Image (cartoon, rainbow, N blue to C red; front, side):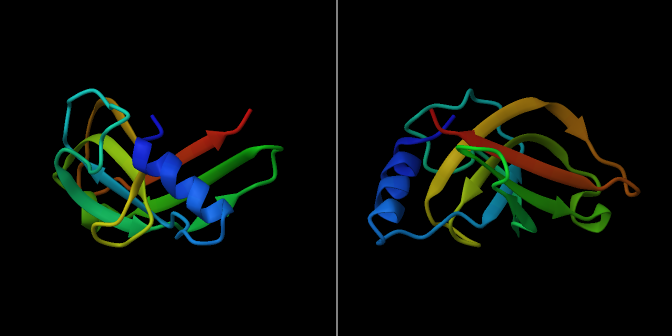
Length: 116
C-alpha cells in the first residue's frame, strides 16, 4: 500500500523538492498495512536499492538484496520502501506471509509502483 507520506513525497519529487526512494527495509510486523503507516512495525534490516527498473510504461520497480548473513535466523513478514538508510519517509508498506530464513538462504525484495 502506498502510504500518505509516500504520496506526499511523490508529489514533492515531481515538484523537484523531494528525495527519491532508495532503500528497502524488512521486518516482522503482522498488522495489516494502512495508508497512514510511517514506519515498519518491527524493522529488522534495511538495505540500499541495488537496481531500479523503469522499462515498463508508467511502472517503476525497486530491487534490494539481503545476504544470508544479514537475514539468517530472521522471520520476514513485512517490507517497506524508504528514501533514507535510517528513518526517512516510507513510501510503501506490504505485509506478506511468514518466511523464516536459515543461514544458507538469501532474499531479494522487489516492490513495484504502477501509475494509471
